[in-house]
Length: 114
Image (cartoon, rainbow, N blue to C red; front, side):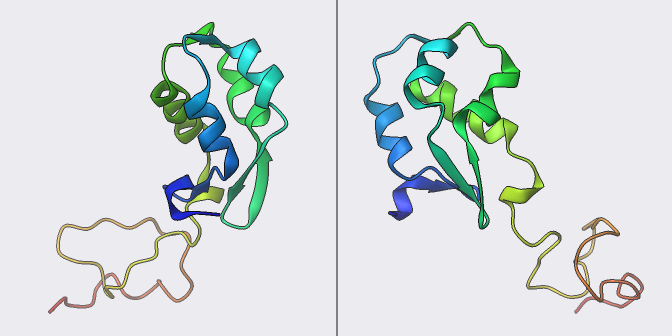
């Protein structure tokens, strides 16, 4: 799959092109009938378009951008991969990290950043 179909940890694959080429405005029912079974990859896991956007109960999407935004809004933590990953250890001044996530993160909060 091309890099053009991956955004923010979500791999749209062929679905990206299909949704871009679709004629808008389009109802949610129309999109789900045409592409609801299409799979999206989220950091090694898969879900379908229907599983993501059906709960939104939108009447209509005016553009591909609106559909893409709905997808991005509905993906959970599974799309981001490793939580709290940073190439900086300890946290930078002013950076507030969640306590859950990265192994070995405990005890780093009081370390001085250089």
